[in-house]
Image 1: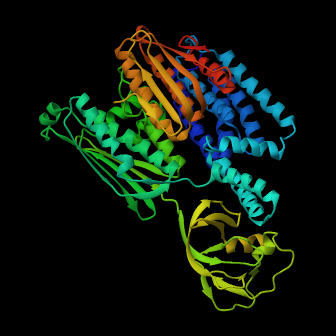
Image 2: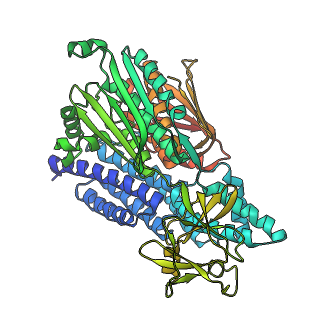
Length: 492
Length: 123
């Protein structure tokens, strides 16, 4: 007896949502080594494997098995996987989505399932062989890094792993004298070029081009349009600039293409024939906020929900409050004409993904006949730090401590940090009187023979806890920003 | 709108002058920073190809040194939308790969499994 059609439909909707979550979780694991996401990936794929077997989607079940094998290898590597591997996982997820969507009983027209499985098997064989091979020498790795530093953008997960190594490299270079210093400088500079914070300025110079593009597109589409851009200048990273630039491009283009109506339609609706798009970009508190607002037709939520139900997208489909998630699904569009590709959903998944990758969010409100407002919020990186600069005997570079730590009176009993000793740059304690600082919760002493000076430092290589140091620059001098609370915790 | 992307180290350019032989050339490094632009370019290109009733497009990636998974997914999406077209409007993607860059052949072989009838790989 065949599987009831309603059960198959239900599976299809649930499976597509599961695959969507898997793709997001996989990106999250790679970008931020998110443990919860890693656990959910293995759980979701296991469930999908079981469900697909139950409803007779044997092809999906087969790819699930292979994906589980890939994920096991990835787990074994602490999710530090290369691009080939990342691509294979992504392709397996997309391949399953395609298999889930195909009509029941339909031939696999053009779909080469055995070929796909063979590709995954080859990758798995390579990955397992690599696990058995000895690691390359440090010299080889550094040579590779030097070669690639100028052209490769490093994923954030790898950046996080390399950052503590960069700090060690910097300390060794700075403390070494003689011929070895040149070699160590090359290593440190290679790492710095590879993972150092790349600053960028976002402002009218970067975003104004989208206004001209919007007007050009409106002309092409026979629409009348007024575009107002209000852009404040802010310091960001190059990753942020690229993501926001892409978001503005898509949101403005979508507003012109799908939000703003033709002059005749607007006139018939009692609106001014000239549509309006208003984009603002500026700093609000700790965030950079971009708002793209149009006075067009708004998103037709009933159409979105109807289309989602038609596509079998599961329980969310009937929920009008979830319209935003629906239009952000990859490839989702309310348009049914086969030639129309730039439907409202196309590109929004990319926008949401790009913004999510830099820790931001995308939200929207819409009103039928009155327009849509998209809001992108991205936390601003703290690139500049006001602090106290210490010079410490045996430490050949400045040490910076955030000004949130205030100088305080001598505090007997407070932990004392001898940075030279901690970094292995001195073999014995200096024996000098410490300078005490407090952040209100903790008081520590820093061994230093000179009074600290106020200074402004700029982040060069940021490192997350538990590492206690980051690399900063003071004018052109490189130094360490130290986090006393982390040093005390590590010491305990 | 201009059918081209010129980033710091990525370039995409479309040649539509010869209606029989439309061509997309990609060069450099395609990473997460350009994915949205790249997706946008492919959307626009798809429009043009459907309008012109194209039967095939050459996608020359010989000078593409690197492409991350997000960018490669744009190709998967592209195949998806071509598949959605009525059969008489569909067009093929004929990739030209560089044999000296091993990831290209591997990734394209996997991509071809999505639609063997729509993807060709040459060098």
